[in-house]
Amino acid sequence: MMKAEQLEVGGATSKVSTRVGSNKGISAMDLVLRIVGVVGTLGSSIAMGTTEQTLPFFTRFVRFNAQYDDFPSFRLFVIVNAIVCAYFVLTIPLSIVHVMRSAARGSRILLVILDTVMLALLTAGASTATSIVYLAHNGNNSANWLPVCQQFNDFCQRASGSLIGSFGGIVVFILLILLAAIALSRQRKHSL
Amino acid sequence: MMKAEQLEVGGATSKVSTRVGSNKGISAMDLVLRIVGVVGTLGSSIAMGTTEQTLPFFTRFVRFNAQYDDFPSFRLFVIVNAIVCAYFVLTIPLSIVHVMRSAARGSRILLVILDTVMLALLTAGASTATSIVYLAHNGNNSANWLPVCQQFNDFCQRASGSLIGSFGGIVVFILLILLAAIALSRQRKHSL
Image (tube, rainbow over the protein chains, first blue to last red):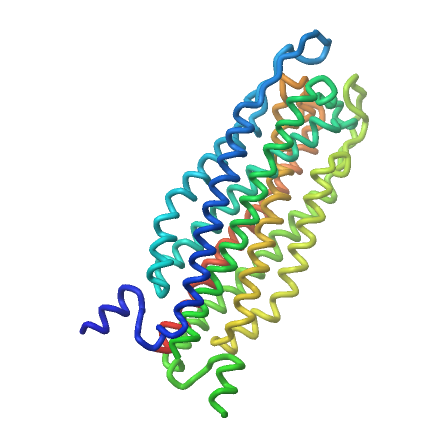
């Protein structure tokens, strides 16, 4: 009865205890990656959210002032990064539980699924913002969209820079899913 | 010795044979989802790649002819969808192997990682194209980018429609990663 309960909770049997250390390492890396993700996405969100430039002169095509929320894509970028940052913070406790109890299974699967959804969300936000940054730098002749970066240079520099943290977050998610897949399969291997 | 070799190949021991059927079901769903993915991404790629409109009249802002490769994002979208479609086709044989040999482990982990990378790639392509479609429909007042869809209505309709297959592909990838995580963890559970 006691043993069955253990299996229900985390599957930690004495058979796996010899190699549990390796999954502990994976869980610790998981924790570190999540902290890196918090820093990256928080930085991106703040950097983009505070992007603003007021020009000292007037031109025919642009207004005096450029703000991040003049572009819906940049607004989306800030919101998505904030959501993903909050998600990272909320999953850190679960990650700590995984370090202590390496054989946890159900919660690992839950994390893989949520990580995958968040990866898709963050990638969507980052690439939408990237395409607008690209358009601001280069414009588009066919559609007659002019490159606004010629006027708002500082604005564009800052918006481009704020993408970095987000792409770091995407790499973090890919590594997290990789580690979780290895951890899930290892549990089986060493319990044989 | 014989048993050790079996473990090396696929981990198919007599202990798991009673519940192997459940993973067979997951593998079969994996196969079906990949075929859905091929159809979706191929459709998206072809629909966007053949998008073109020639106007019967002349306006001040736009050229007579609009093609998908006037926009770098749409070109990226076609290329990404073609890559993902080829990836789906290439992984179908591996998926068939998984249906026949449910206990395969290493190849499942490999697929999870590749699926994750392809998910990020497809999401990036689809959201970049979406942001340009949005811009073409609504324009942007701050940057003085005019909505070109008012002139090129058919072009925009077709470009918008071609996004659907790609977003279907994203859903397919999320389901595939979910199924793989469940399959990987089940192998462990039933081998205890």
